Image (cartoon, rainbow, N blue to C red; front, side, top):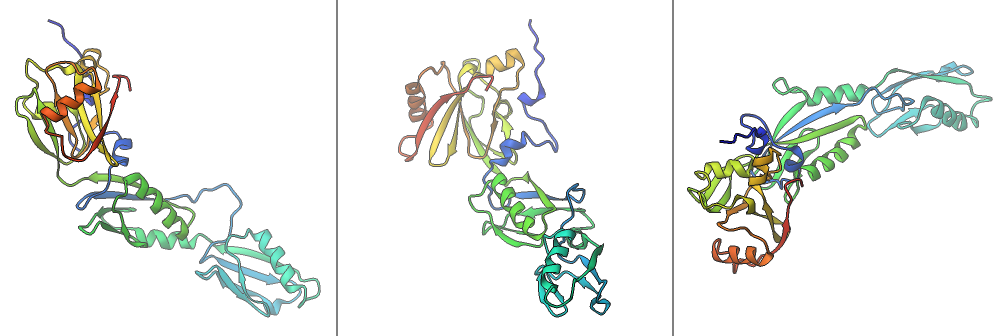
Length: 313
């Protein structure tokens, strides 16, 4: 009797393990999904510091000490200076701001000379951290997708997530949070999806629908369905997944993956369909007949494309 060692990834892992995050990134968000959002602050940039909102600026005029003042940069990025009024300072380096002020004051003072210091900086980051910090979660939060396909995020409020994937929402959130502070970035992970179903037909002990809360492997689904029958042709396991407006069919050689021990088995997502045939599926026409005869797919109004995924893909 031959024995084989197979990686656990073929069957999926239990507990808190989440399969390949690249797969979960393409999950289209649904009501009752739960997300983890984690906040990161990049405060160790080696570039020249640029003035930000809420920074404190001390401006000392050598030739006109009566103009000396300490300024806190307003949320709109401006400060108010004697005789010249509001001046935008956010985004300037100290040297750039000195040049800007020299231009503004040359009509008021003879050879204006002054120096600028920033005794308190990155105060906006500290305030953001204080606003984001939660005693139970630290700088992360659990976010629930509500029944109206909206989710509420700290500091930016409600966001419509309908038809958005996890990766698309992450990109959008980073843009929104980046407007608050360029040092702020977020990671967004799918923690839990609503209870959904995958379907298995053909040569298994108990064909039908099975509820899942996370993506599972094809082999895990076969095990849930009571295992493959002795007539099952595991070299031609068919999966179907809805992608945009079509159903995409793929064929996997599970027998070869088990024999070689290579984790080439795809993870299944909600509403995926798996079919275990009796005979090897070689042509697109074979798949069309199987879909029509066994899964009663005719009349659903979907088109489907066909691709054989090799065991190494």
